[in-house]
Image: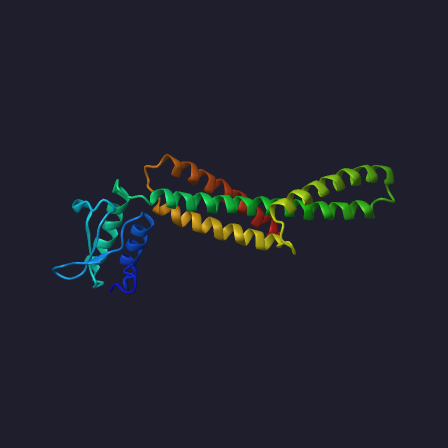
Length: 210
């Protein structure tokens, strides 16, 4: 049953339908004048886009709830599609920032290990080691400076924490992609960006497993 601000329903399928309608800018449901239940109308109050919300959770009403989500997505009066795309874009940008930071932090860690090894082997080839050390140190300082620009907080998160933050952002973005309008050109671009970030994050996870 609906409760509170009329955006909450005790049935999972109807709750997903209400969440989608709210994201697409539909007005708050109102109580039906006859036959019970509630009425959900599109922003233009188009009668053909009207959805009756049932209070019971039978299988048939759950099917109606699922089919109603298609109607919400197809409605040309919806204003919230851009909002969903903005959330996806924001989450992908955040995930990209965390992944880049994790990639840099991983490179820094590998560079530190190489620097330590070069110091240990310095007795065997001091001149060559010094040259490599200088190059690696310069690269280390450059990466460390860029990483500070990306993640200015102190203490700096670990690579595991950066990867976890990126995973959370990607999971949210993927969930919103399922609700995004399928005929939007921007969705395709965002989906490609999501897939590319997923591959980069998988590389980081495999590096952490070693």
